[in-house]
Length: 148
Image 1 (cartoon, rainbow, N blue to C red):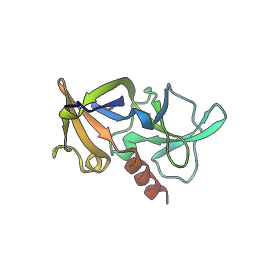
Image 2 (tube, rainbow, N blue to C red):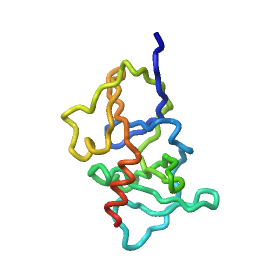
Image 3 (cartoon, one colour):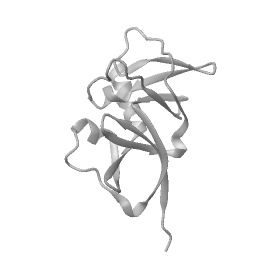
Image 4 (cartoon, rainbow, N blue to C red):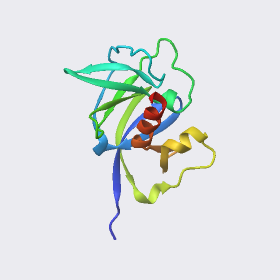
């Protein structure tokens, strides 16, 4: 009997604990100066320069309809790989890479917000908290729909 497990790069948004599959993550980095982009959706926080590569930074709080970050609170970057190149997801805090067992997987709970339900593809029950699995593709699709 094989115990399937998966690794997630974790992060915090407000009080929620999220994860994205490790293989989708290019890197995690501290706050980077951003260049604002005029006339785009508020979801796009700006552009960051990642060693010469220009990367769009998406504010996940905005995608999930969460309140804005406090003025002094600088976001961190979880840079994910996409078909169109890397995209940075702005998060409040970066967690560890954790390994979860498929046994802990559950479908998305009913009591999360409709916006989260759209972007969360399931949860893992951890000790004392839930790990919400972010569907990065859907998060980026929503962002594209908003900027179109």
